[in-house]
Length: 95
View 1 (tube, rainbow, N blue to C red):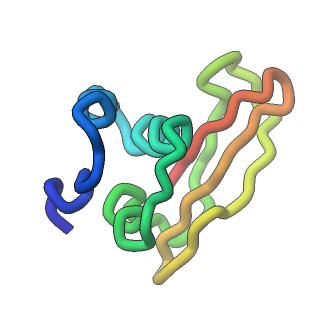
View 2 (cartoon, rainbow, N blue to C red):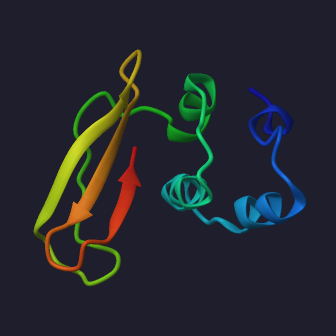
């Protein structure tokens, strides 16, 4: 999927926000905040794939290591983990 196809349908403000993201997780979080539903093909393009549970580390917001996680996307060994901090409630995505 080309970058042009990936961002098809976004307005200028949304494009600027997407381009300012420094990671896949940031991009997915921005899409969620904007209420943008990504297609399977778009998710595959931005999430990559790990085939197994990644090291989730600590919460990027408060550095807590108490993380709840669940797979939100799984297709051809491409997993997207939705992570929520039990301490502060911050939610982020890890691929």
